[in-house]
Length: 290
Image (cartoon, rainbow, N blue to C red):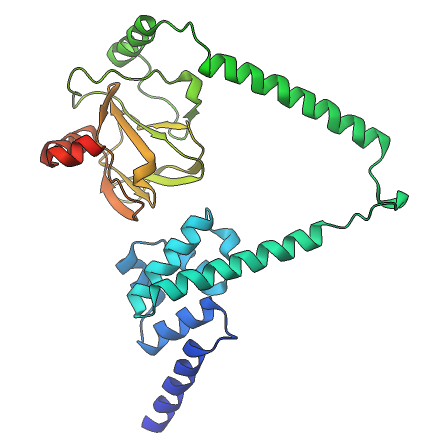
């Protein structure tokens, strides 16, 4: 029996050290060598089980983004005692190889081959689509960045909504950046105000849920997207790997971010009371950085 276990351990060790094996296979071998279940790794790293399964399978396209793929693999490696830097580099190489293969498969046109050239109708359609996109971009730029907005009116609208606006809302509704007024920071936020999270970058994955597992909202947010917690949410919490890319306001007043670094947070309370308690306990330097 011992010889069989020794043989299995030796095979797993060889797989972990094999240059030809994928990084997912090496991570799985390291986990099995320690006799750990994948659910144990999920509990230790606070990474969803389905994402760890994707890492082991090498299915990085199933993860929210390249950043998440590298970060999840690095945390996995730390949990099973593998080299974090080497693991991150291996994931980067596999992602680069996958992108190269997709580009090679997509590039099927050859210059001078009439059979592979787009039709005139498709070319006209592409030109019209490009024109519509350009007009939309100009309209968005003028609306979002153009001068002439009245700060007083925006503040008044925010205060009116905080006092008697629609607090029910759709749990998963996103508002565009053009609808968000910049909140004044003069007075302190109140525990009863609306809690709004705004993405500061593209590709920010976040999951909001009530204590007990009831999901409120889960998506990969683009820069400027907002999510407002329902007023009746019971002990709302967040799971994200980019707390540094999410700004927070309560009743239109800014409060410190959950973190200034791209770390994985799970089961973190985000009610107005919990966020204000974090802000009060934060040091002056941390508050200033947020």
